Picture 1: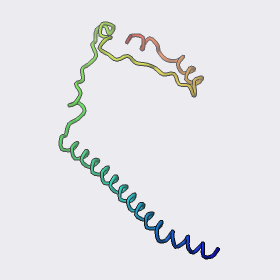
Picture 2: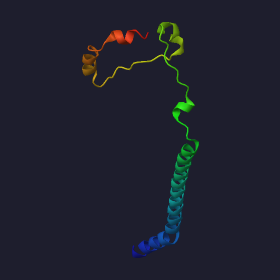
Picture 3: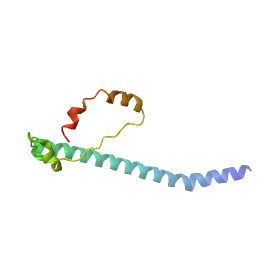
Length: 108
């Protein structure tokens, strides 16, 4: 039994250990490579943002809502879905009673 233990220990030391060390070193190298890539892209994004000096107002053209009847311009605006919460619906339903619905219905 003692020779079997020393033989298996010798095999693990001679063959398994170097393979595991190479795999661990390769994994560490890949992890460092991914971290360096993320840092590189982060700093490039920050540098590009500072270099271009563009604000969101430059990308998007904002126009004010028409002051006339909104029903005529309804096709220009996206449809909105209101999701009713499921977790605390009793408390939400109690709060909904106190909303001013006339304010919301004028936009339809």
